[in-house]
Length: 323
Image (cartoon, rainbow, N blue to C red; front, side, top):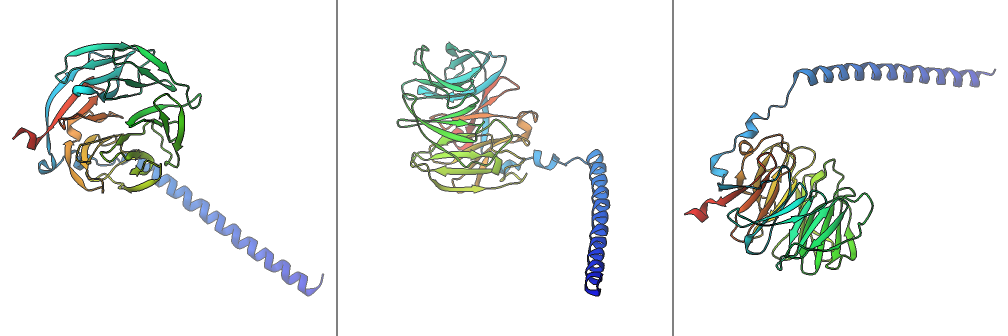
């Protein structure tokens, strides 16, 4: 073996020794860090108490009444003509007058995951992996072919001739015509772990989507392209907390967006630019185990919140409307 070869071997041996020492140090440090994290996990709880209190000056709505649904399980909410209230749950959709009086009942095969009602009273309901359409009188008109066998429609928004369906399974928005023909889709949403995908159409006809995995709201134009959007992640009242928020949205006549959240359960109003306008109901108004609050806004500007614990539609009225 010549000198050059011996020198090369000594160099390689040295480098391997250094690499080995580094690996051992890395393993020890990560084990220690892991032990520290495990210890922290047993003894440390995130202090959410300060986030449960809301400055009274920020609360711009008062709760007016609570409308019992008569359902054992409530799953979906929508507003129809004349501010009629549609509540899905059990194996039915119950149609309530604005004062909570039951007007009619529509039987369905399973609890609806989402509802939307057009100006003529035609009802669109997410049932299982597809959408079913009912005449204003409650008669089933048609059942649309699902986009895929494991599709999960969790929201429906109506715009002109479009029926926009949020498929939480595939993180996409499907655009159908009123006959149930799939026209195109919106892709590229951030993956999220919860079966949620809130949507609403604003007064300009643009579609707002709650991109919950990114704690973000996105606005899509009629061509399906993103026009604007913003993300605010955090526990403070002006932000969206946790892994997947907001869970649902609705839009007022002035274009401001009503949002509902889980983790820290609350309902608030934000501007299209993301500025906090005010709070509809703070965390102390809700059971903090709730994972989804369906919301809607009626023609009078009342915010309707479907409370799955109370099995009721809770009605909130803007304070300036009462004066």
